[in-house]
Figure 1: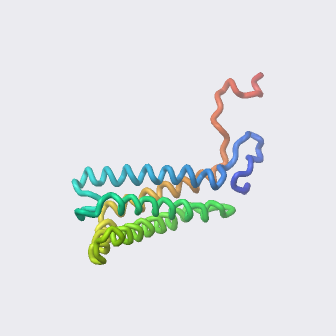
Figure 2: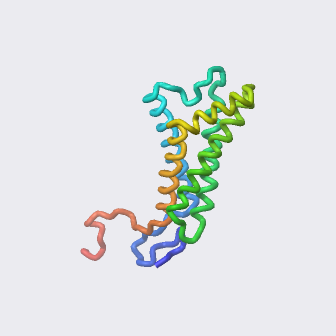
Figure 3: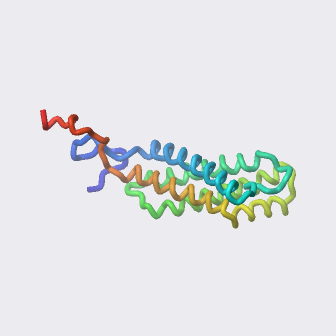
Length: 167
């Protein structure tokens, strides 16, 4: 049976899919958390900075994260608003998010005064190392979770003493 996203469960158990907007908010928060954690742990394990070029400051990284989360939310929203979103669409969300991260990183490195070569080198390094894998991996996992929230039609957890049939 195919219910529309956000519609109540036809069985009457009080469950239903999570509304697309709510799913996007939850998934976006998850994406930010996974992205920050993943980049930090990768930096700790490899003993390298995400942006290893000295003198660029914090702005390029912050702008790249903000742009990637915005792209994540918009691309996931387009996916979950469909009637029956496919889990394969998480690949699209991951790709869009990674490209937005790299493009924003490249542009913000240019805006802080570094040259075209530096901006390209910084973006290419992130794209070809574990940092790039973290960006796309966080978006894939969070995108899949957002799609799952919309597709799942379940009821809230209930304790055995809450059953009205036993009364």
